Length: 362
Image 1 (cartoon, rainbow, N blue to C red):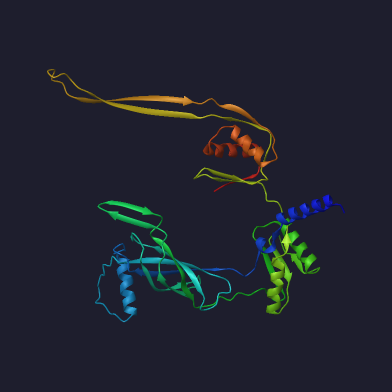
Image 2: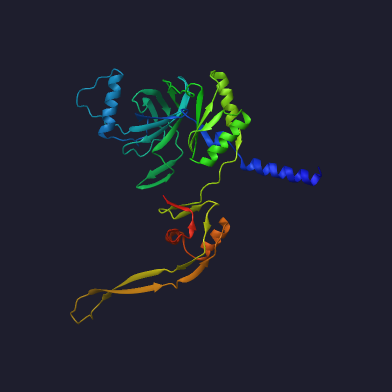
């Protein structure tokens, strides 16, 4: 084989490798998932930036009673150095008691800042109401702020922070790695073509009949019964390369910010678009009518309003049929519309059948 053909073959292989993804990037193992935890706690040690509400007072009284400090009934603690907070954390799959996880702390009341605060021992519960971790530690904030004489300056958020490794796992969540002799792979997005290619890659590299597609999202795989061999088996499967199917043409429109994102599969049929703007401007000129010194009149204010209507010329632009994303972008830019105007243009093109893509508004 000549050197030229060797280089051509190498280029084809590199292109194929660049377009292929690992199965671990396309699918997850059913049952292997994180769990969300939530809790409530009190942060103390704030420099006068806490929350002196009734909620803080009740929380401190309840905490002190658990520590053996009994306060007289009806005691109201006005503590500006403490604040009630909500706690959130993610319990990873296969987490064992004694492992550490990060905790996010967010102020619940009128606290101005959590900087310098310390979270007191607080439980983190799951959806079943059971305590799975205990959190405590110093809060780390990424912001800064200062105020004096009514003036203030702030950088980033001061009412939410994190405690790295701030919670200790106390309870393990059972995570079954498959049922019986099978494990299930779940694609991150439903696609029959990708599911068929994953099944083909597993059967071709592991053995015929190892995997079968249940539907466009779930793939059933026969795995060894021994746990150690099953882990090695999953490691082999998740590193297999698969070329995923091309994504469906889609245009994502964010109506709040005016952002428009489209993938490379979007195409446009031949159509004509007219674009024009109509603007109404109302201006008011306030003046004062001042009488003469000896006329005896009164000073009266006058308001003179002017109304003007401006209409830009609507230009009819022909958008030819295009099959590349760059051509679509050039065609839409030729209309000369702003991103907000493009929202209406894209919706009209979709209604006319000229936009070959799914239009999703978020």
